[in-house]
Image 1: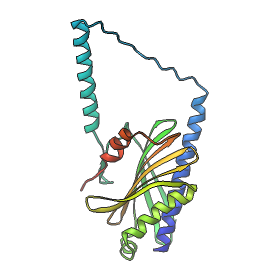
Image 2: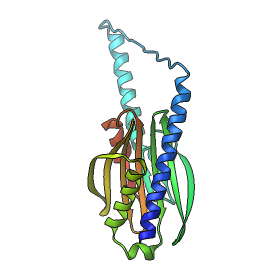
Image 3: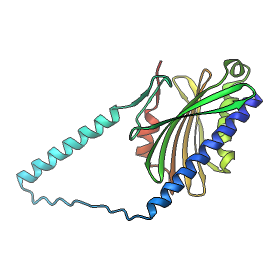
Length: 217
């Protein structure tokens, strides 16, 4: 069990460092260019034509919003669904432990140079998991994230998903703000992360992404 917890800490540490370095690189590259934002001002003088047009635009906007909230990215192997803001990139990493080689698959979407979304899962040897308890494994995962960055936890709470135990916590390291959920389903650990430079993601963004995560059979 001790080796398993150590692996969790090391793996979480490497993953967060990678995300931070990736974001910083893209952030500074994009600072070299000017971002031009064009705002379209629509003035309606109260005419029926303008009012009807605005109603149609509002209806279209609501329909697009509803359709995007329904569509979810599905991982059949990962046995989960979640509403990414865009198409995520799949990656697979392995690490050697005393218990053998453990694989972690991650799904990452970079919304911008300063905001990133990720889901990851990894399967631990069932025998090792049986000798421990979910609380120990979850605390080890949380400790790995925090200790690797010397981050400060600002909020944490125990949560469940379909009776599977988990943790939700937020943390800050320098300008990076992390919102994290972890769940343990049998011998599989799920990690859901939102990482943003400068401030926490908005509540709407967190609800839309993290709140949409569901486990499937």
